[in-house]
Length: 193
Ligand code: ADP
Ligand code: 5GP
Image 1 (cartoon, rainbow, N blue to C red):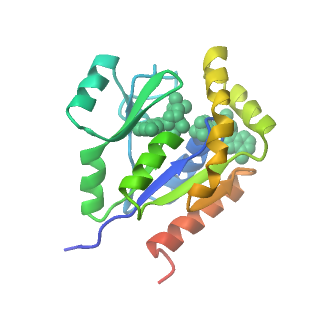
Image 2: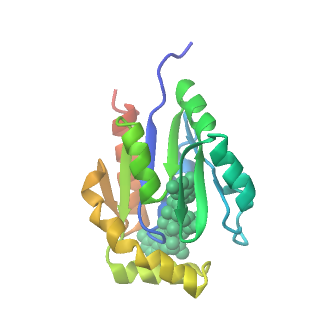
């Protein structure tokens, strides 16, 4: 019987910085004792996104009912859409000794950091604002209005950088991935004991 609780990781940073890219690779290399928390959102799915894998895609009424039913650990309205983390899923995994990674925007991250002072917060920063815009546009998933909304909040997101336990500049994917792995290994005792 494993009585050790899982650790809660909060990964945040501006849209387009590369959080999803780095985490996808991270999960290819880390298959045991760690899981990704799939959020609920009212955003429309992108062509490559699958319901239940990338998000649980719902309409606004369903999301608001979930708020009323206290289903979220945190939720936020970002760029005109709602996003929220399922509370029961996260708590159950942590109680069963599984580490959980939340990939959420900065307002939600702040709420989780207040509720869970022991969580491990990681901020991904871009090498420059120009490169961030280049990546966001290059991803080709957002219309111009959504790109503008996402870029509008970047400076305020970056101003909070010293509130996180770790910050990682995503210059090269391999570089950032190695740093995330080092943080994960250190914080979980993986390969360090
Ligand atoms: P986020 O999940 O933070 O919104 P994504 O992972 O979707 O960001 O990455 C945004 C775009 O930037 C994608 O097209 C991705 O391929 C690209 N990208 C991610 N990391 C890097 C990097 N280190 N160098 C160049 N391009 C990157
Ligand atoms: P996207 O629309 O690009 O998938 O996500 C937009 C932003 O919402 C990203 O910064 C992403 O990390 C964040 N996000 C995804 N799920 C959640 C969630 O459950 N809660 C909060 N607060 N943010 C989320």
